[in-house]
Amino acid sequence: MVSHLLPYLEKFEEELSRESYLHSSGQKDESESAKIYAEYPHLFSREHITEAFKKINTREGKLLYDAFVGNFMGNELKEVSDEMSSYESSAEIDFEGRKLAFRQASNVLVNEPLREKRKELYESLKPVKHKLTAYEKDLWEKCYALINQLSGKSYLDYVSFVKEVDYDAFAEELKEFLVKTDALHKSQLEKNMASVGVKLEDAMPYDYAFFARAKPFDEFFKKENLVPFAKAFWKGLGFDIDAQKNVVLDVTEREKKVPRAFCMPIKVPEEVILVIKPHGGQDDYQSFLHESGHTEHFANTNPKLSYELKHMGAHSVSETYAFLIEYLMADPLFLQNCLKLPKKAAKDFAEFIMETKLQAFRRYAAKIIYELKLHRTDLTRLDERFEKTSGKYNDASEMYVDILTKATKIKYQPEGYLLDVDGGMYSADYVRAWIFEAMLRKKLLEKFGKDWFQKKEAGDFLKGMWSWGSSGKSCEELAQMIGYGKLDISVLTKDFVDFFLGSMPHS
Ligand SMILES: [Zn+2]
Image (cartoon, rainbow, N blue to C red; front, top):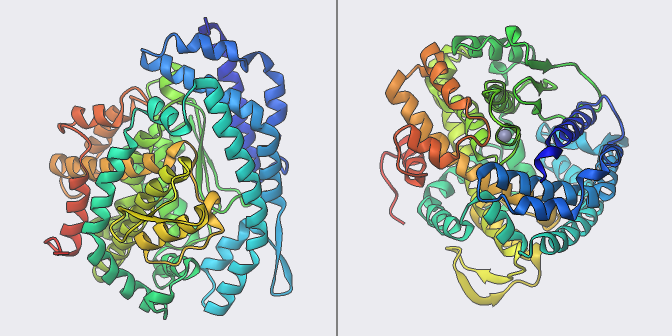
């Protein structure tokens, strides 16, 4: 039996998370996960996988099986992965006569008002991206082969089996959403790009990134106010971060700290780290709120749940809670009450967030459609409605550019065709979470009123849901628990449409 290995698995995964935290928070230059793998050689054998397979008829059993498969693969791929992240963290580019760390470039790019300079910086990133893509290519080839050897399944069949999601049926629903919201999206994008002086037909990823940085709103999102604001908001909902012994807030400035906020659940619920390098601006606030949602979910997980249910499984549940907190930024009342925005600014800013949310949702819907085709090496060309044609794409990068550009109306570039791929169909976890978040928010509004985010009773309601951890209940089971039948994309579609139009455009 493999259950006797659980204590070692727990220790191993804890050490791996800590290593990742230390590396990403800029406290350790090298990523040395290979060293940690070397300390636990007995965990990575094919026999354990065969043993674990016998118990896959229970939720814990299936999670454990997936963990053994995942760790076996991680062990096989550790050298390449380590080399890749060490390369990425040390990579530098030449920009305006100085050296710039690759990981800092996106921060510089979103803050650059001159289009020519944005373009120059974006172009200068390409050699590093090409090298990273070579690593990715190597990793994916090995990954496909390993999954097949270990499970007898193709990559997609394996992920679909473990996560219990029918990706093809899901992709059909998303295609419908993309078509339905296309006209609405186009008019928004035209307006958004015009606001930064760019015509829609010329819009490049670096232009959209600059727009999404939303400099005109900076006065409301000061660097020094971020942490005090977030703590005060959470306190209103009944969570005192300073008093939570299991939550560690890492706000220390370190040169090599990654610019995006992140949450590292080292041991759920006993040690959850929330990391940020505040730089100010709305995107900073948005990502910090998102990560704080993950943090409270993990920190409020019932400690008595099994290790598998606390630490393993699909991410759609946790992403739902992260989105729930993040998209408070699209609520004019939250903006006025908690961030002290004047009424007009709150309305404008909420509209901005909803527009970027629609863009992000469409981008991820397109990623799912693309990733399904990529993993199957299906190069059949798609038409404007994302339906199959008789034509073929020349290669995966052309397919990536075409599908992503159609959905986002931004000219995607071929360099991203592998770097923009989420392992384990994580993109679908996000999309499922966006759908469930709209459903959960609707319930909170019905139960606790418009200012639910300032009520301890709403916090208690969430605590009840959060106690189920990552995998105690699936999105579908949680949806049923709060009074729905199933995950229903129409709630999200209606959310967008009500916000922008009040009625559906006829397209
Ligand atoms: Zn997240």
